[in-house]
Length: 272
Ligand SMILES: Nc1ncnc2c1ncn2[C@@H]1O[C@H](COP(=O)(O)OP(=O)(O)OP(=O)(O)O)[C@@H](O)[C@H]1O
Ligand SMILES: [Mg+2]
Image (cartoon, rainbow, N blue to C red; front, side, top):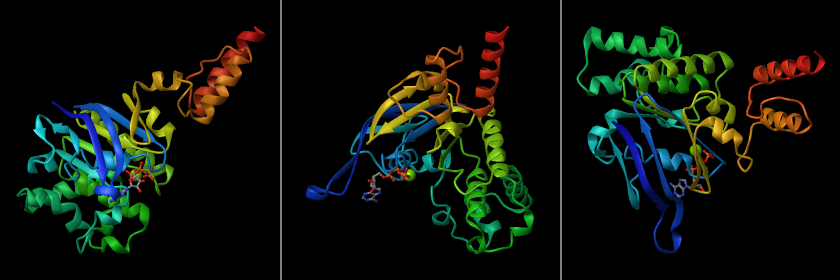
């Protein structure tokens, strides 16, 4: 059971106005697998993930979800997508209605629906005080959390998140990653799009790196960090520099904490 993207090509527009965005993209997302999609501004990340729940259809190639062609109606229920701009995802009069929209469409009601909404807000960390508010009266960060709760309430088999951490404080960001880890442990396949390499490298099983619509890398984070031709986190660049200056540190470290430990260890070995 997986999402399979095979030889995906996609263009916006037709004839002379045709703009080719995705060129031969192939990768998969298994159940319980965490895939990070990274790449420069405008390289086609959002366009790519719109194919995973059938919002866009490939010009050539194909996308299947658990064997179903992505344009099939059932795929919308299997793949939950948190869009880059949450305001585009919210449309009900109250936060409660927005979060309840998916499950009530699938026939849930009464106490079960009430429980489902409260479970979703608990997972993302928002207070039940705002359930009666209009989603459009919320801050940008709150809107993103409500939109995420609305996606989670439908219990998708695959969760796709487009820049979910933008506008979130460290507190909510950490909570989001804890929730994603729990979902992954429960077998949910996760696709996370981010500009922040460090966010993705720390949690993903697999990295897909897009450059101008082409997939130029697919592999494990450690392998990504070992490649000198791909953009690297600043800490990794520092560690590479220290290593080539003769300090015995790992060159694939990307967090401040690990870098600190690595440097302290290498220095004490040198002294001792
Ligand atoms: N509906 C559309 N019609 C025509 N061109 C579009 C449309 N949506 C996006 N594009 C173009 O496709 C390219 C890729 O856009 P996309 O939003 O997929 O990039 P992205 O990698 O998600 O960028 P960002 O990191 O800024 O979110 C951009 O050049 C954009 O202008
Ligand atoms: Mg985008």
